[in-house]
Amino acid sequence: MAGLEARAREVLAPHVVDYVATGAGEQLTRDEAHDAWTRVRFAPHVLREVTSVDLTTTLLGRELTVPWGVAPTSGQREVHADGEPAVLRAGAAAGALTVVSSNAGTRFEDLPEAPWWLQVYLPADRTLAQPLIERAVAAGASALVLTVDTPVVSRKPAGASEASFWDLVDPARVRVNFDEGYAERPGSEKATDLGPHDIGWLAGVSGLPVAVKGVLRPDDARRCVDAGAAAVWVSNHGGRQLDRVLPTATALPAVVEAVGADAQVYVDGGIRSGTDVLAALSLGADAVFLGRSPVWALVEGEGGVARLHDELRRDLVEALRLAGCRTPREARGVAALPPAP
Ligand SMILES: Cc1cc2nc3c(=O)[nH]c(=O)nc-3n(C[C@H](O)[C@H](O)[C@H](O)COP(=O)(O)O)c2cc1C
Image (cartoon, rainbow, N blue to C red):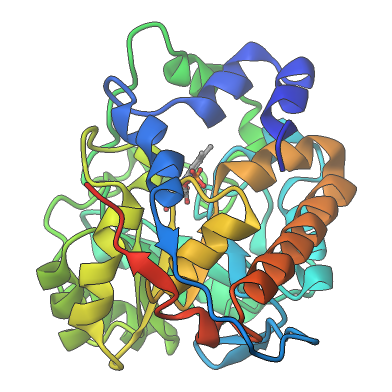
């Protein structure tokens, strides 16, 4: 996976590179994400049979071939004309799940057959979100991911051109699942009053399990589960929201403990290699999600994303064998030490 970003930077327009790469504030959180995984130390098992490794993982009732998925990212059709369909096809072929952003550039009805979940931001007037959710359900979304770390979109550092990204994009390639005039409707602004009750409301209107994305604290994780969340997703939005928050590798163990067996726990942020995935699994994650890596890989279309999945699979199988594990589940507890803050 090394070199993906560098290759993408050679091809993409500067405003697209900035949009994908940039974090919030001084970008400390973005920059610490990967390093935090590298601080996990393993205590591998030996004298165990590791002839074959089976990565099969069940996420919210759906059996997948690998313990990772693609996190929701907007702007995919600015990276490659095939955008979301290419990411979904590559994911389906690899047996991975893909989460489609509510700001996607492809209409849900045009997505290919693949396992996918819809990510949602709820607006101040919740009922405005319903038509989009209903269309996603009809088009095959099998779970919802409620992003809860974005009451406002964080300002990006001076000089970074996120604003110009939204000015420069072709409107036909972003947010195409919202009706004409949606943004002008009263109540369409992001909700600043999200609460645990929204989890039950979403499950009710969709009939789907709900994962809550953007949790960093064990007490919040518990509130999500008590409100009916099927999964808690430890994330700091790739360092794009509040800067100086905990790295997800540091936050994960306490969330795993608070959730126990009552829901699944996922994590994203700075995961770049099979050893990073092993670190997350060893700290108790049921699955990991990849944000920027598949976006950079998408520069080479479906083939680029397929190669990313392939490389990660080989990398993780090797890491698991070296750790004396035959399955992702057996990796649990292989971390000798939680990562130092
Ligand atoms: C370009 C870009 C767009 C994103 N768009 C969304 C989004 O629409 N919804 C969301 O919940 N998260 C979004 N995220 C956050 C990712 O889902 C994920 O949490 C983060 O990228 C993981 O960190 P990583 O990039 O280090 O893997 C976005 C991230 C990036 C880089």
